[in-house]
Image 1 (cartoon, one colour):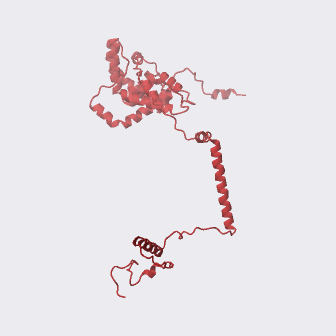
Image 2: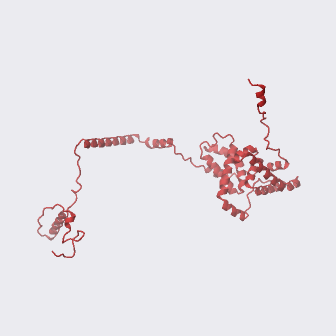
Length: 169
Length: 170
C-alpha cells in the first residue's frame, strides 16, 4: 500500500480506532501497540481494502482482533497492573465544563467496570453509531448477542450514572 | 402472468428505512453518553505508527525475473561469451564420451609414476652422504619392483611388518 493512501486511512480512522482500542485496553501504550499493528497490517498488503464496502467496520474488526491478541499475550502483565492499581488512561477529551468533566469521569469509571465484550458493543453503539447488524459483523458475534450485550451494558451504565445525571440536569 | 393468488403469497415489502426490531430510540441519558467526545489519538504518534511500514516481502516469479534481468542486463556480452564457452566445453565432453563408447583408447595418467620407491630414496640418501663426506658413491642398484607387504613379514620384521628392534634368531 502506498504511503499516501495509508496516511489518508490514518487521517480518516485513527481517532476512532484509537478510542475503541483505548476503551478496551485502558492503557495508552497498549492502544498505541494496537494501532501500530493495525496500520502495519494495512501497509503490508498491496490492496488491503479491495472488495471491502465498509472500511470503518473492517478497521474496527482488525482493531478488535489486535486488542484480543494483545490482552491474551499480556494477561499476566495486566493482572500485575491491576494489582498495583495503576491509574487507567484518560478515555475522554478534557473539557473546561466541570459538570461535563464530572460526568465523563464517572462514565469512564462505569465503562471500565463493564466486561470487555459488553464494553466493545456499547462503544460501537454509542460512539460509532453502528447498528446491531454492523456491530455483530464487526465483532463476529450473533445479532441477538450484540443486542443483549448492549442492553446489559447500558443497564449497568444507567444504574451507575443516573444519580449524577439527575443531579447535573 | 402472475395470478392474484401468487401475489397474495408474496411476503410483505419492508421499507428500507425501517429500523431493525432490535434497535430502539435512545433516551436522554443514552444520548448524553454518546455526546461525550473521546480523546483523539495523540498527534505525535502518527509519524511513529506510519514509519512502521515495512517493505512488502514478495516471492513471486516476477520478482525473480526482475532480479535476474537486473543482474544480467548490465554486461550482456560477458554472459553471452560465458554461455558460449560452456557450450563448447559441453560439446567437447560429449564428443569425447562418444569416442570412448566407439572404442577409441583414452589416455590415462599413471598415478604411481610420481611415487618414489624406498630403494630409490635410499640410493639418493647414500649419494648425498657420499657427496658430503667426499666418499666414492656406491653403485646404483637396480630398482626392485615392490613386493607385497605380506612378504615383509619374516624373521627380521615384527608382527605388523615393521623392522624389529629385537635381534631375531635366524
